[in-house]
Image 1 (cartoon, rainbow, N blue to C red):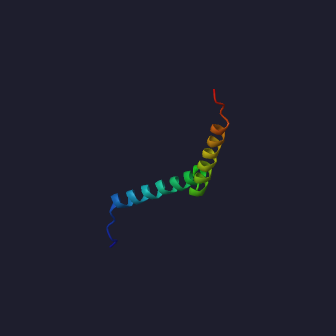
Image 2: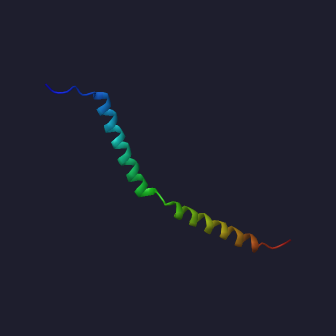
Image 3: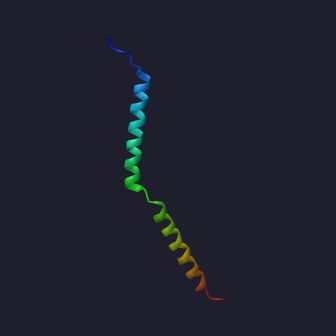
Length: 58
């Protein structure tokens, strides 16, 4: 005789696997690494500093 299977557990495991696959797909499509985020932040801060330095005094 076969061992009984908890269908709720099986359903939840399947849902978790699907969610993880979707998250991995989104991370590959939209995600950026921490280094890329920091580089972009540093560049925008530098651009803001340069722009502020070019302001004319009235």
